[in-house]
Structures are given as structure tokens and as C-alpha cells.
Amino acid sequence: MRWQDQYSSKLVSPEEAVKRVKNGDRIYLGSMCSEPKTMLRSLEASFVEDVEIVQFISGSEASRLADTGGYRFRMKTFFAGIASGDSVDPHLYNYIPLFHSQIPFFFRNRRIPIDVAIVQVSEPDRFGRFSLGISVDFTMAAVETARTVIAQVNSLMPRTNGDTFIPLEKIDYLVDAPEPLGELPEEPLGERERTISAYCSELIDDGSIVQFGFAGISRGLMDFLKDHRHLGIHTEIFTDPLIDLVESGVVDNSTKKMYRGKSLATTCMGTRRLYDYVHDNSLVEFYPSDMLLNPTFIASNDRMVAVNLAMQVDIRGQLRRGTATWTAFEGSAGDSDFMRGANLSKGGRSIICLRSTSPTSGKSTIVPTFGPKSTVIANQGDANYVITEYGIAYLGGRTIRERAMALIEIAHPDHREDLMKAARDLGYVFPDQVYYRICSPELRRRIRTDRVFKGGLKGHIRVIKSTDETMLRDLFYNLSEESVYFRYFSTRRSMPHRNLQQYVNVTEQEGLSLVITIGDREDRKVIAEARYMLNPDDLYPDVAFMVDENYRGRGLASTLLHYLSDIARERGIEGFRAEVLISNRSMMKVFEKLPYVLHRTIEQDCISLKFNFSELK
Image (cartoon, rainbow, N blue to C red; front, side, top):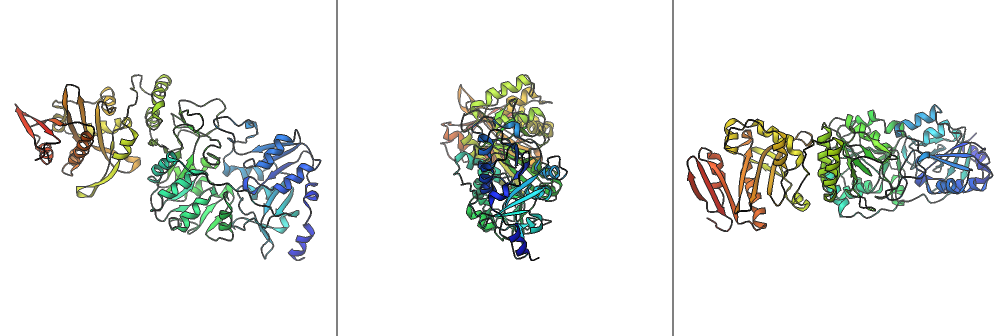
């Protein structure tokens, strides 16, 4: 029989199709933007009852049935967090906690049995095959294992490439019912989201393969990735902003070992523009979750970068699943697969982004512990980086104390003192750990910059942070006895925590400390530090330096002194003073290069220097 004749023989009305659903059946439904609304309305009008609906994310029409249908319809989903504000999903008992890569396996071995699969498909191609279009994810496994398959043929469903096709023989009943696909409008991002996106873009190198968690972060990132080159896409949900990255040439998928030149996803959600873009587009391919989200397959990409969102992070680095508060959803169970895959990838990075405070309650999103009903999506080892609008916290290989300090650094300033107190009470930091104090975020952002020094040395200049304690300790122990004596005017032999924590915590009222770091982000070290400290009895603060002798002669101290001078002058400080040993000729040269008149006083083996910013040579 020709497939066209088979098609006609299987074509029924929506009302006729739902008669195949029996009381007590478990139904798999296409979800979100591919939810078969025509079929759901017919299902509601039928007399069926005690039906269990299984969806990836509970769609609007299925949720309405479950909420208003009494005991006729019950819902099960693989996504927790569809709630408002900071509340917990009232139907959390319906949530099935599985990694997305595992779900097709549970369908196939019938640990989660599917009796009837009701899905939307595209119109058939010339071979009589139907495409699952924008929702492949677990739908393919549901279709393969269901006792009965009902397909709503929608002429508005795009035909997508990859492993998306279902032969006519696999479908029991066809319902010809065109209807608009669900669309998710884009939400304009505020300044906080743009700042987070800018920080995030710094962690994505040219040639990286990127996964973007579904939400506004991908739209914000687009503006900061426009100068990147040769990026690839291996993601769960393909969204509108990715179109612009592909069409602008930022994404070409040229560095992939497999599926080179192809952007890969399991589903897509967005606007009609997106659905038209993926229709018959050979550059975008869709595959089931058990293949595409398998951490081993994800890790086959070198430099895999997973960028996801969370609702909360505790000060140990665990992540809580989010709610509908950024654009659509903060987090999905696929995040865990991608974080693990990125950690297994050569040169990979796992990144979590979140606002420092809730947009609805103003509460800190970095918390000491989670509530009893919180859905933890990642343990302490899954996220390498956490980003808020106050900076980047690197957690890889760090102790609980170092993690707590790093996360408190990027928390909202109004909540840091309480977080530090909680960290002390919980035993996450030393009992004598001081409250983290910092200069203004504006000054931090203004100062942080990359610079190439003499000899091609690439360094990063920024304000000192409390988490620099270990790097400052290493710098001290790398100094020779002579260098230690030049800096401290004594033969200091150790730098314990009680001294270091005071050293790295400098308020604007006390002065300013800057450092230069080198190396990869995961393996950075401090090679120079400079500071000025205010003295209430003197208008001229003391300035001092510490430079790794392996990097002397590169202009590090001179650069830091210029930064300190510029900032001090803006703050109304008249000038600096310094104490330099006569034998420390290299430091004397740093001061002699300044454009200011130096006033010198020699006492025994020490030179006292003083200069005024308004007194030029």
C-alpha cells in the first residue's frame, strides 16, 4: 500500500482519537511550545478519568486539566520549580527527579510505562516520514515504547533535521489539526543581567563549544560574544538569540570533532522566527536526550562550556533549581548532565549565573543553607564558576572555607556580613575569620584590566580580594630573604593566617591594595602587590610594594604605583610617602621615574621619600 493510502486510513477526528485512551492510562504529552492543545481539549471533553499525564515541563493546557479536572487527570513532570517568586512549586510531589539523559532509558524499560503517546508532528515528507519538529528530547522514546501513538499533524510544525523522523508505520492514529505553536516572547534584560553576561563572556574562549541554559542569559551574552570566533553549539534548548550568533559568524561549529558544522539540540523554544529558522535547516540538528545529553558525548567536545542559571547557591557551592523569575525558567534537569560533561571535557568549564538578590523579595540568592523543600540540582563539585553582578567566584579544587569566602565576595554587599557570621557559626570558615570588606563595585570594575608588560608578560590588574590569601601566602614564601627584608625591614620568616587575612581585607577608609595576577583562570598566581595605607595623623599615606623577583624589571611596580596615584589623587589625597632601604636600588628607580618632585631624607640605611601630586618635576 502506498504511504498516502496508509495516511488516509489512519486519519481520524480528535474526538475519535481520544476514544483510544482508557481509564487508568498513562499518557505522554508533548510539552511547552509543542503541547498538542487540540488533542487536550478533546481529551477534556471525553469521559475518560483517572488518567496520568507525563510531560517534560508541564504545559499551560495540561496544567489546567490537572488543576481543574478533579481526579480525572494527574500530572507528572521532570522539571521542578514552576512557581512564582521565591515560593516552592505547590505540586512538587509530581516531580520525577532524573537527569534528562536518563529519562528515555526509564521509558524503554518501562520503569516509567507509557500507554499512549500524544504528540505533534510536521506534515509528512515525500517518503511518508513525520518530523517531531521542535521537541525531540524524550518524545522519540515515548513514541517507540507507547502501546498507542496519536500524532496531531500540524502544518505549522517545522520539519527539523537529525534523529527526528517517525515512520508512518509507527503511528496508530493521525489527527489533522493545524494550530499555532506556543511562543515565548523575549524579556528585555536589565543592567544586572548585562553585567553578569559580560563577566560570563570572559570565560568563553574562541573555539569553545557552548551550552546555554534556557533563559535571558543567552540573549545578554550575545552582545558580549560578537567579537568571538569559531564557537560551537551543543545545547539542550535552541533559542532565538542563537540565530543571531550563527548568522553573525560567531558560531560556525568548526572546532567540533563530531558533527562538525552542525549546531545540536534536543528541542527549541521561542518565537515563530525561531521555528521558521530551524525548518529544513541542515545547520541545526535535533537528537534525543539520551544521546545528546550523555555526559560522555558532551565531554567529547574539547573546551565545552556549560552556562546555566540557578535560583540559589549555598556557601558550599551546591545549587538550587530555579523558578520562573528570569525569563521563562531558571534551570532544568539537563543542566546537571551538561555540568558533568563540561567537567569531563578537556579544557571545559561549568558556569552558574544568578542575580545576587531575588528580584521579588530582595533576599540574598547566596545563602548559608537551603530550605527543607529545596530541589538541589548540583552538588559541591559540579560548578567551576559562579557569577553574580558583583564578580566571578572560582570554586574548582577549593576547600569549603575558600568556597565560602569566594561566594561571599560576590554576594550583595548588604548581605555579606550576615553570610560571614553564618559561615563562622556553621564551621565553614575559621572562628576568627573577619567579615569580608571591599571597595565599591564601581572601583573594582574600573580597575580590573588586562595588560601586557615588558617581555610579553600578560597580567591582570585588579583590587585585592579576601580569597587572595593563599596566593599572597605563596608570593611571600617565593621571596628571597633579601626581598622580605626590603619589604618588611625585618627578617620575617612566616606569614600565618592571622596576618594574611588582615593583609587582604582593606577598606576604602583604610587605603587601597592592588595585585597583578598571571596564568590561566584555573591556575592563577599573584606576582605583584602594591598598596597605600592612610594614616589619620598624616596627609601622605604610606605606599609599599611586593614583587616576585622572577618578574622584576617588567614594569609591574611602576604600573601599580601609577594606578594608586591616580586613584589617590581623585580621592583628595595630596601625595604619598615611602620608606626604602638604601640598598634597594630597584625600588628607588621606580620612584625616580615618577613625574613628581621627590623629597628625600636619609636616616642611617633608610631613605624616607615624600612627593606631592601637584608638584611636578
